[in-house]
Image (cartoon, rainbow, N blue to C red):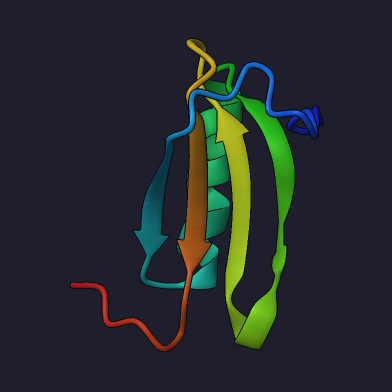
Length: 75
């Protein structure tokens, strides 16, 4: 795991987000990204109000969030 630098170096100012329908789907997306050589930035974990999220960088160092929010209807 590599943390995002506190000064923001290497961060383009944009984070793309994937909103999963279930926690298990969020897990699968992170696992798939890792098998495709993504760098895991933050492991999946429960955060504020039962939300669940994790972050990874793709090969071009774009930051992605994979999240599950039980209060958000995803179709």
